[in-house]
Structures are given as structure tokens and as C-alpha cells.
Image 1: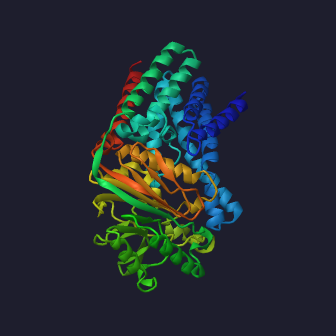
Image 2: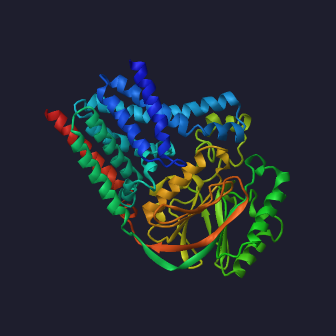
Image 3: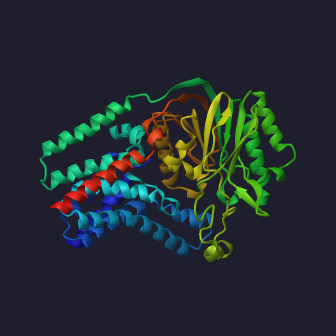
Length: 492
């Protein structure tokens, strides 16, 4: 019987992936959580509950982030066995969070499991977003963006607030299944959540700022396996030069590390051509290009975006680096892996400032973020409310043919909702897209094609509650509720 329960928990975790992009079937994740909570409520011991949580996590992350193997093996050139072991280790680590949630709830609140489960689930998802620099991928709140009525909560309480709301909904369903509440009571509470979210969806948290801006997002589709090869560089440079000259937009955006060469090593007048062409349109180009500096007598490198054109040149340097991909944790211990096993260029970068300022370009204040940074909502709002438009440049070619690029797009949609700002995403191989302030994708390019996405976008001004409070509002509420439960438990 226990084996069946664990297999069911694994299947529920895998089913939950349907709530995320590219499927966007948001009820799936709520129903999957309801099934898990039902199993946990019926589990007789903390150990069994923890194993059920671990099994659910194995299904969720084993299916949802299996693309890590592609990044490590296909592009990082890690041997297949080591890549499989590393992917399993990461999936196992993040699966510990639902396991810990189930174990703690059953141990500390055995009589109030279905009340404590949503609180602790959302809290530990938030912990997962910052511990060891953070890995918030497949936070359950993302599964509700942008179509679920619960997405209306995003501008108020952010993605972790949505995680709390949907886990409460899941707990209500589980409570009805366990006959702790009636189906009618469950329906009334679910209706309240969904109606509340629907009402909030119709509120406008920002107002137009300035005139609409014409844009061109360039998707060069440069193969990751060829990008850093010296003999491929002329083709890469010519590709982006041709695409740039074909664009006549006020804002031209070229992806993360699109030019895999320091500016001083590029052909003479190459970037000057970029600047002159953009200035001739009365606009600017944003280009992903590495930068270098001297620190403590050594040369350090940054993942950066530079603006060229009518406005004075400005630069943004990525601050939230990807561990093992852009910097080497415990370098003295495991640096040999990068020398002997992995082959990742610029794998040990320097971090940019933690307090960046928006760029003043073409009448808008543009908040830049690079690739992985836009999965951290609390970091994006550092440039708000001053910023009127968000721009993300990425290179999701590392993910190959997998779910990852679409999942990343869904996180960008969440950032649009949290800030009530439109988002422009320019990527090397996809998903290049335009996202409105309501989190909906207005247009996108097919993946793995060379193309430009052109259009017009409006900047916005205004402050959402999430911009004001970040994650602290929902985290404070969770801690207060857990404290009240704990106090009641001690008194009983």
C-alpha cells in the first residue's frame, strides 16, 4: 500500500508540471497539490509524510528540470554519467523542500496538517529562492500565470503569495476529500479566492508614461556549440550587424553575450557602426557583450549589456550570477572540475552592483536584467518604481530542445505582473517575446530561428503593492500565522 502511495505522489508531481509553460493548464498544479495534501493528511508518521513529499518533488523536478542534463552534457561537455548524476543530485536537493514541509507539518502540527501545509510550503519555497544563492524554478505560484484568476494576486503579494493562495485552495480540496469540511464549504471558500483574484485582475496598477516606443528584438540563433569558437566569430558578428542595419526602431535589443568578445578586441569601428545606425534613427541599441576591469591587480570579467546610440553610452553588469555556470563556488576545492571536466567559457565572472539604476533611453527609463536574474522578483523591483519598461536579455540556448525556455518566459510574465510594466525579451535562440503589463504575451518568435521581432510598446509609471513591500508582506503573514498555530499547539 505504501509503495502505491509513493508512486501516486511521484505521478502527482509529474502531473503538476502541466500547470507551467508551455502547457499553462493551471488547474493541474492545484489538483496535484490537493492529491499530495490528501496523502499527507492520511499518513501516520512524519517519516512517511516526508517520503511522500520527497516522491512528489522527484516527480515535479525530475520532469520539470530534467533539462539540466542537456546544459551539462550537450553544451558543458560533461560526460553523460556525471551529467546524469549531477542532474539527479540537483533534483534530489530541491525535492528535499516538499519533503521537509511534509515532515515538519506532520511532526509539529499533527492535528492541523491542512492548515499548516500551505503556510510552510510557501515559506520553504521562499527559502529555496535564496539559500545557496537561490533556485526558485518551478515555484508553484508560477503555474497560475497569467490565465488563472489567482494571477490577480501577483501585483499585491508576488509569486510566493500566489503559492500560498493556491496551496490553501489545494488544502481545502484535500479537506473535503477527507470529510473535514463539506463540499459546500469548500466551494464557498474556493469561490472567494477566485472571485477576489478575478477582481484584482481588473485593477490597473500603472498608467502610461511618455509616447509608445518602437522596438526591434534580435534573435540571432547562434548555436551554443559554435558560439565561442574563434572561427565562428566572423559569422556571429556579421549576423548581428546585418540584423541591426535592417532595423529602424528606436530601441534595438541584442541578446545576452551576443558578441562573445571584449569590445577592444572587436574589428575596428564595428561598435561605432552600431552607435551611428541607432543614432540615425534617433534611438539606441542595447547589446550583450562581456566587459573587463582590473581588481586587486587582476583582470575580472562581467556579463554586461551596453547601450549605444543617441543617448550617452550606459552599461549594466549582471549581479545575480549562476553558480557553477558563471561563478565557481568553493573554487579552491572544485575548480579542477572546470579545468578537467566542464568546458564552460567565462565560468568565473565578477558580480555587478546590487543597486543598479534604470537606463535613460528614448524617453523611457529601462530596467535591464540578464537571463537568470528575472526569476528573482525581489531583485527586479530594485529599479522600481523609477523604471517604466523592463528589458531582459537571455541566452537560453543552454537548454536545447526542452521545457526550460518556455518556463523562463513564464517567469518573465510574472515579473510583468508584479511590477505592472511591459517586458521586452531578446534571446539568442528563444523565447524572444513581448509581454504586456498584464503578463500576457503579445508576440513571440519561434525558437531556433533567426529573426527580428518588431513592434511598438508603451512605458508605464506607478507602484504596485509588491513593488512597495516585496516578499516581506506575505512572509510576515506566514510567520505570524505559524506562530499562532505553534502557540495554540503549546496551550492544548
